[in-house]
Image (cartoon, rainbow, N blue to C red; front, side, top):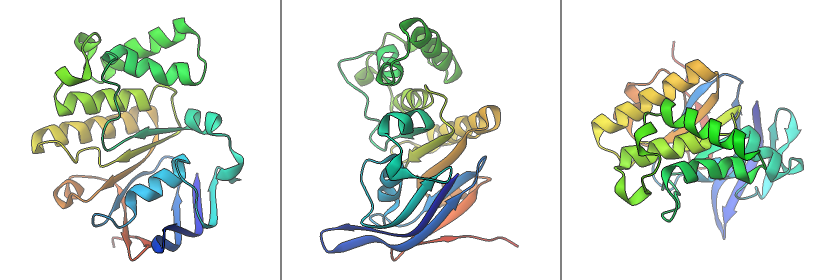
Length: 218
């Protein structure tokens, strides 16, 4: 699904990715770990086209990602951001519905899909609530529902449990694993939480010194 070859990404003179290779197969549940500032979030932004590589080749379904319009890419790839990125002036239902409006879906379809997703993430009773009245775990569930709105084939999640307590983090991880099993959505999660990694049944990649390495277990 994703093939990244000899990719370099610089911010000024600092290369967070250097001649890096990475691949993700359809149906994978994968985790990318690394220290803070190692380039984990930058990799997700490259895949989501929030930024562009300085060198190298990134392909999605064998097509150069630079040749795929962002409109099309937003249908194929969902993104859960580290800071949730919920709009404070809109309620839960409206925040989720934004994903459908962004790609021009009919209002009837938007309303039906938003209702289904709210039920799936356990927030049907919070549809009229505003983000500032929700707990961190509830806000993360809203962000996940929004990212899944267009039924993406790939879900990217940047530190999805980073701001949550241990029990809430475990609940969010369980939700993501269930969604992966039920929807067959390919997932790539970024984390630096070693305790979390021990709970996961996933392919694990490590980023260090600008390069990515897949952990192979015998």
